[in-house]
Image 1 (cartoon, helix red, strand yellow):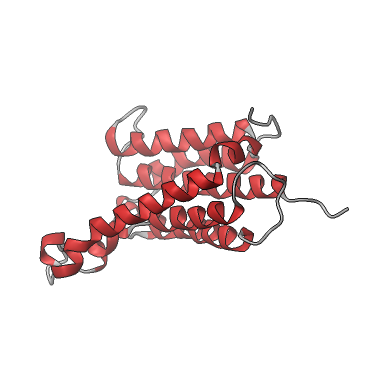
Image 2: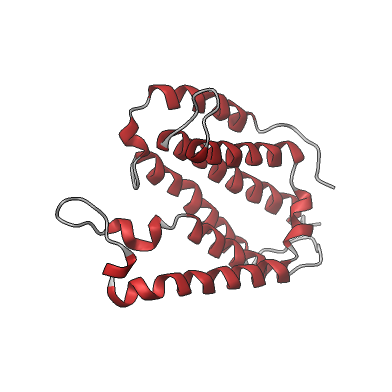
Length: 196
C-alpha cells in the first residue's frame, strides 16, 4: 500500500499557479523547444542524474534489482524529452521542420531505435520490480502526479475552464516532470539502508 504522508506543498502550489500562468503567459512560450519545454529539462536531467547516482547505493531489499531500476530510470528520463527525436532541432530555411522521410538513414532508424529503448526500459522495470518499489511513495504525491498528467492531456486535447493550448500543456508537463523527480527522490530516500 502507498504511504500516507505530508503533501508536497510546492507541487500543490504550482498546480494553482499553473492556471494563472496559462492565462498571463504569451502563446510563444509554449512553442516546440520554447522556454517552458526547455525548463522541463531541469527535472529530466535531475531525474537522470538521480538514477545514475543511485545505481550503486545500498537500499533496503524490496525484491528487485537496484541496477535495473537505475538504468531503467535513466532510459525513462532520457526518452521523456524526445525533442521529436531530433526532427525539431533541424529546420528548413522557411522555419518549418523536417519530416522523418526527409532525414535519410536517421529518419528511417529513429522509430526502431526508440522501440529498442522502450523494450530495454520495460525489461529493466520488470527486473527491478518497480511496482513493489513504488509502494514506498506517498499516495498524496502520486495523486498530484496523476493530476498533472491529466491537465497535460487536457491542455492538448480538451478544454475545461479555458485550460487549453500549448502553454497549458507545457506547464502541466513541467509539473508532471517535477513530480516524477520528486517521487523518485522520495522513494530512494525511503529505501536507503541506514548505517547502524
